[in-house]
Amino acid sequence: MKIRSVRGTHDIFGEEIDKFKRISDIVSKNAYLKTFKEIQTPIFEFSDLFAKPLGEQSDVVLKEMYSFEDRNNEFLTLRPEYTTPMIRAAITNNLLNDLPLKIFGIGPMFRRERPQKGRYRQFNQINFEILGTKDFLADVELIFLSNNILKELLPKSNIKLYINSLGDKNTLLDFKISLSKYFNTHKKKLSEESIKKINTNPLRILDSKNEEDIEISKSSPKIYEYLTDEAKKHYEDIKRSLNLLEINFEENPNLVRGLDYYCNTVFEYKSDNLGSQDTLLGGGRYDGLIKVLGGPDIPGIGWAAGIERIILLMESEKKIKSTVHIAVTNVKFADYYLNLKKYLSENRISYYWNFKYNLKKSFTKASASSASHVIIIGDNEFNGNFFTIKDLMTGEQKELKLNQIFNYLNDKSR
Ligand code: AMP
Image (tube, rainbow, N blue to C red; front, top):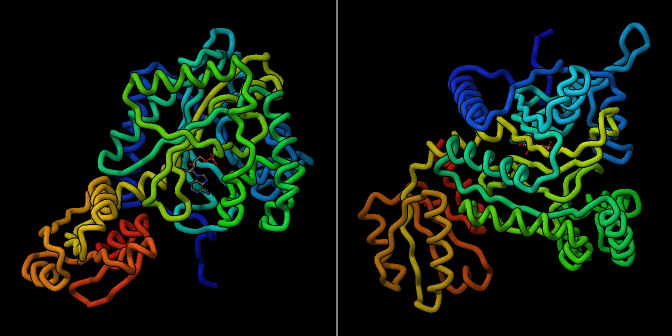
């Protein structure tokens, strides 16, 4: 029998290990600058630790944990996330006497998910937590920190920060009831997966990737209307601070976190260049969790980022070699062209256009230059909201949506 590795796991060596070390160094440097203390916890814990707070309806508990029975009838679980073990460690080691506690950790997590690009069964996370303060400035500090780290690691990548507020526990309860009602009236159009969640975990329908679900979620009740004055102020203070720090963000009212204990601030960084597993980092406030785990009733907030996904983006930053020539057939497509131009600049893809609305002349110019591809903007493209991209070496022609262009060119550069 040939020995092989387990599906969804991977060995890290060569260039990848260098990148891994670079990431750890930059994370540690930023952590120490902002006085976070490192903590390492065991990779397995008692299963109860995760089952309790993650809630019976959470996907992680339902199907993704690696759990096993130890010899003395004890159930153990390989950690699927870092927040809970970190809090457990803070309680066990009496670290909560001097608050706030600012801690971070880097290490492997385990989830029995369907493996694909950017999704593994053993993967590595960076994790930051601040325990023991409700102050909005703690939320800002953590977002600021994540922004600094990602900018330093991925200076050329087009990464977007999305934020939302989930309000307090009561807000969330009221909101869930309205959501369930709304989704019940649109049940017929929802995916099978989402129908199962209508009454148990309707928030999760909001972050479904199914196109029909997304369409229905667009007109669903919005949490902002349910927020208390206090929660609104918390959220507004954060937005004002982010603007002051010149951190770009976009509000996404449908942004939720999978687990029940999240409240108030939630945030996520996404990149179009990661394929379907497009979330690089996710975080939020979890007042109430520490108490559930047997600690004092103090609030907390944290975030986690996937190292493998950061490495994927680091690789793509280096690789794009294509030069694109743009062929615009009519001046009426100026706005459509500008959109493409913005996308190409944001993704550091070099491009050229000769300002001549003539397909033939554009191709002649492109062939005479060192362009590898031509992107055509004509009636078909404009009406169908796509771009035709032609590989000048092979003659291959493809119709792509704007956000597919980077991955297409990146795959070609490998
Ligand atoms: P989560 O705890 O699910 O919010 O995940 C936080 C971050 O960890 C995500 O944004 C990803 O970057 C990364 N991540 C989560 N699950 C996986 C996985 N199965 N494989 C690789 N990275 C993952």
